[in-house]
Amino acid sequence: MKIKAEFHQDAEIFRFLKKLDGPEIRHAAALGLNEHAGEQRRQSIVRISATTGVPSGRVGGKTRVIKASAGPVMSASVETSDVAIPLSEYGNPNWVRDLNPMADGKRGGAVSSMRGVEATGWNVRRQFPHSFMAGGQVVVRKSSSRYPLKVLSMAVLANELAKPTRPNVPEAAKFAALDLERRVVRHVIRTLGA
Image (cartoon, rainbow, N blue to C red; front, side, top):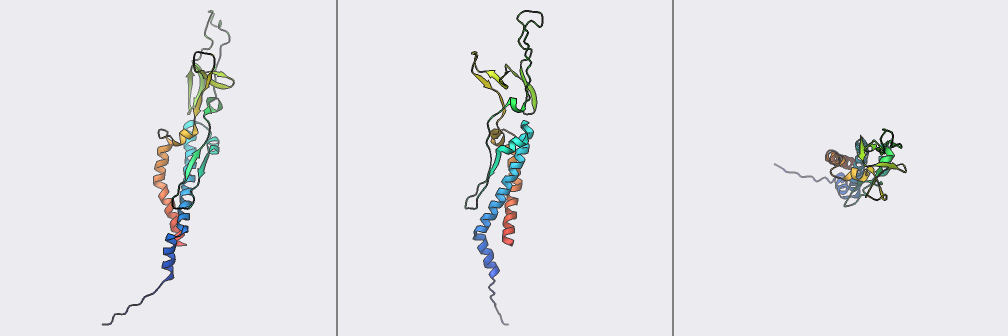
């Protein structure tokens, strides 16, 4: 019985091992992470718009992705920057003021028969007690003095995006559990196979 051993040195295995340690893998992982962040942005815009009633164009214009760069630590994020959106902007406010206090035939009648301005906020039409229209805004008095007035707002987009009690956060976490690893692995496999 004779035993014969042959050693074949294949350059392909060394190229494969070099790729595992090279910048190509980090670049592929960053591509997958950025792709996932872009999809998170798109889905968050749809969810926030559906919840608040703010048009998706406004939400999309204020929401951006901060992309990850290829490095030892990668982080991509979705960021929204906007002011509190006043009720007068998308709420279609309505306030009927009775300018004739004698309308019901009694002296000293109510100035308005409404409890407050009727407006839509978070896709619900309701009256905001003690509010009234001034200068095109829905306002309420802060104290018993005539001024200052507080402008009522409906939604703060940053809160809608990131506050744990709002519906976007749990939905985004569920989507990340399903999608993030799959996207990153797909880009890494494509890089290793090339």
